[in-house]
Image (cartoon, rainbow, N blue to C red; front, side, top):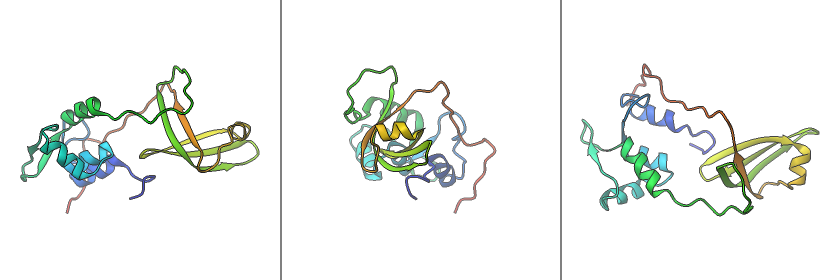
Length: 165
């Protein structure tokens, strides 16, 4: 699965047959799911469990699981520092993603810029004039600054059923 098409929620729901309640409340996550959500390897999550940094339980089948609430707490308290912001300017926007420009597609008026910011692809539409002034090219390091009054949060529907192997 490539980074652009990765849909963590769909992957998680399909893996668990949507039976563990991603649609509401606290759910239990398997090690692979926790690793996907945190952007680390399964082995890293296992090391954290072995070191006692993450508590583990077991599901009905005896597989190790982590309560999503525990994973959220762990994530907030152990989040790595973001990459250094190469712009070093003051801003009221708090959502800043340092990344690599991977694609620039322009016409006379508008330009679409794609950036890879860690595991996330960020797409921006801007005037071609602005893109030229910023000298955006594939390989450029840039900062995607997101300030929006609307952020949409989605979860699986409660009635979603996915056949499992």
